[in-house]
Length: 220
Length: 207
Length: 197
Image 1 (cartoon, one colour):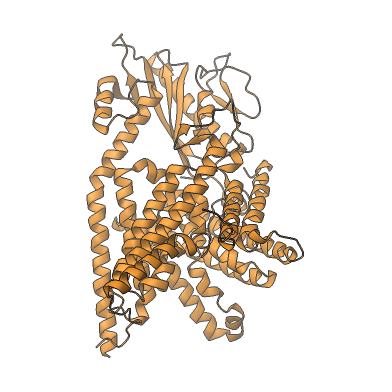
Image 2: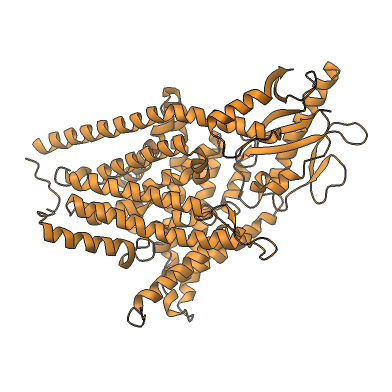
């Protein structure tokens, strides 16, 4: 019938599945971290990390959309003709992102305003497309869900770290609550503007690289 | 041949499913979006009129507070929001909405005047798309806070509320923002137009 | 409606509101293709062309097709993406047909542009800021030039970077980010030009 079948994911025996899921979890969140290792999703990591709550919502959005799109693409992987593969992926990703956007507008208009066009830009976020092509198309649904969630988590974690630094150093507040009052610390506004974002992300990636290349010297 | 037919069939089904999901989400979200828009507007007006209200109030409570304290009237083609005071004929404060083009996008705000209709109670620029850190500072507390207590006419009686370059001198002037000259110029023009209209309205009605 | 002239928007989009250095869009291609000046030049030129044309087409699609139909609020993302993908595909076919040498020179640039979030971002910003037709054209062109300027500067710096002593952990993306941060700070300085901001 449909001769264009994507690479077969293989039957998912219980033991095989658990191992795969564990690997997907570890890879997605740490060893193959989407931001620090795969260098994907950089645009939003810089744009929405000016406030911790923005970063958390964006992280949540990405976990939601990546998990669901990975799931659907994995379920459809044998049914999708090769020719329309990319367009189908974009359509599925776009649908989930826009659904999220509509619900954000309905139930949290303040966040929707703060995030602006960056919610819609999740569609072009290379992480979703990247995971769809690299994982969901070749694997069965359950590991794909884990992979999507793990990558989302890895992304969210990096964003949270950047945002904490930026908000604290840039305004002295965290999640809107004043942590460093202005008598103790003069906020450095450059941190919440563009230059600070780039520099902090650079330092974080450097720290990640340093941590990864010297695991044996870390004593628990 | 069969491949093509399947591709078309698949694309159609996927397209329909996606469109259906999107439309469903849009329909479900619609009433909430409308309610949010109204609540946001009420919150803005209550804030600029300095009506005391709980910041964490729900939309329903906000509506109640709004209905109790604020009255919308139309005068001279302008929509005004009056904060009722003890004297029924004289409102405690009046909020006048304004809108105009900023450098990057539309700027919308409210100007609230005290009962003498000359002193500024507060101003709010609740919608603007200016450059963050530069023109975007018009939305910040320090810029808006400057307006409190200023008057909308200069000492000789000429209408005008000005955003000046450098330090403000007169009682109808506020400091501009360094590096955001164009935004401030546009805001200045907006306020100028608004104030002229308010004064003209007052003169016509002998208010 | 915006009263700012298209020329001011164009200049501001290049310097003070640079789509890469202020709005963080288009980072992925920026990181990958900024290794050599020649590559950066080619990609930059392609981006300017695609961004200008697609911003104009998307303006037309939004205001003359979607809005009258009333479906603009939830369908415009997909339509914009479809327009951009279709446009790039069309240009690729056109160039392959009429100038095979140019097609080979551009190589993989064209498909790379489809996933450049700056292109979609420019269209989205145009809608948010309520630009008129002329302003949208000015903004699309200016944003493209701004992006190309940033990648061109970075490619020049990266070629010099080979002679510097970069700490091991910072090799690769990390040092690029820091350099970009400094560039972003420098570009913010353009706000001092009274006529622009």
